[in-house]
Amino acid sequence: MLACETHQLEIVVLRCDPIDAPAVPLRLGIGKFPTWSIARSPDPLSDLDRLIQPIDLVSAGGTQIWADYLSALACLERMEQQIVYDRLRSIYFQEFDRPTSIYILQTDLTPIPSALGFLVEERIVELPSGTEIYELLGKYALPQDDRLIRLSMGLSHADLEGCLRKIDPHRDPYAQVERFRSKRMALKGIRYMPPPQHTEIGGLDLLVRWIEDLEYRLSAAAEAIGLPYPKGVLLAGAPGTGKTFAAYAIAAQTASPVFALSIDYVIEGGGLALPKLLTTIESCAPCILFVDEIEKLFGQGIDRRILATFLTWLNDKLAKVFVIGTLNRMAEVPIEMTRSGRFDRTFFIDSPDEGQRVELFRLFLKRYDKRFANSDDPVFSPQEWQYLADSSIEFIGAEIQQVTQDTIARVHRERQTLTVTIDDLIETTLAFNSMYKRDKKKIHDIRNMLVDKADPASSGKRNFLPDRQLDPYTPIPHRN
Image 1 (cartoon, helix red, strand yellow):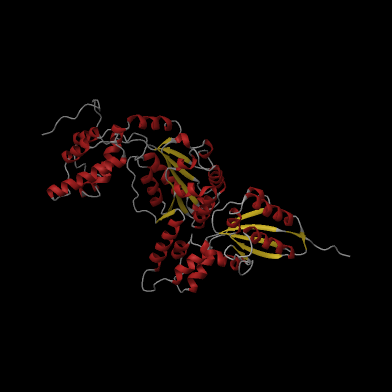
Image 2 (cartoon, one colour):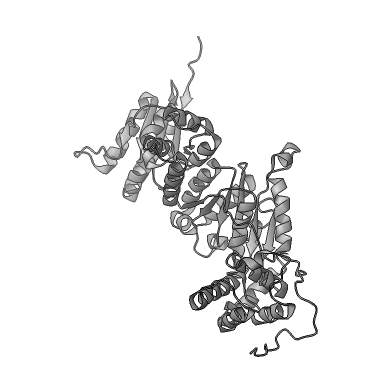
């Protein structure tokens, strides 16, 4: 006589978007509709009775689908919760004559109770693959090209189908899908930006050289010889030194879309929000994940699961997601995050020296005054450039940009021209209250902390001015 094959109960929590929940069972091939839902609450039964009722039905075997069961469970009194835990544990160790499963469709971030942790497997419902998107585009008679497929990535199945159903055939379908995805991702704490257009970085020659090497590392040629996909880069420095601009320049140079992670959304959602966000980002690969002020993820009072989840993902991710993080305070970043294998490099972006300040002035001026677009034309004399460099000591890139814009605006308002003089620029610069003047000590503290912990983004050897024997802090003579 053959022994009867027995099976153990499988309990799986499926995390998905609310809009996707009705279609998930059919899409995964586990059923058609939830067999228990928090919305179905027969009045004669107490909340505890309603939660025990589906458990009692499991003894018959087969598959059950419970919608937002964890949310209802979290609303019970502690003693009532314990009764449910005990009942689930008792059936978990039963033997069944046929495969038996409980799928919990969870549409919010309610955590799995620690008492059930060893019983339950947790999964995040995968977003549509490229093949599924291709089929959906064909279903709605839309272009099935690579561009529209990539613009559709990151949307849930129900979201994407709803978007494609509403496409206006008389308008650009690419713009419509891109706009819809941007709005949907913003609700999830992700800001989408197309590949930026600006590619020039002023003054940061070592960082520029590294970006040129990065272009090769991201290419198919590097992949063909077995080089691993780069992990990411940290850009550290005082506020306004150009870290965010450098991040956008990396994206522009590599023609990669950028997805900016909302730190506040992650902190509010805790350790459970981050895995869903990272799954969404991975579905859009290859891309860049930009995390501004990344040190906020590891501050005091932040859920420790966030750190563990993020470090594990940085180390183990296989998707082609290049991470760019900016930070102001290195002391708050755990040392294990900066090791090789999680980020490829950490660059220190300091205040520009005099040659770099001149380069930045030229970079920003040429957007308005075409004379500065010709690199062979100095426009001003070396002595005039020296006066401008002396008047802007310790100015950061953002301040040089602001001074340039203020000068252009004033000159155009007063003289109806975009042709600026060196006197125009110096007048605005001397009147500007720079961050260094306001917070000298804080900037020195940031600089001293980073100088030995990160690679310099600049060699400091970009000479645009002739050598001189002059104290740079000597006041600039008045010019009539």
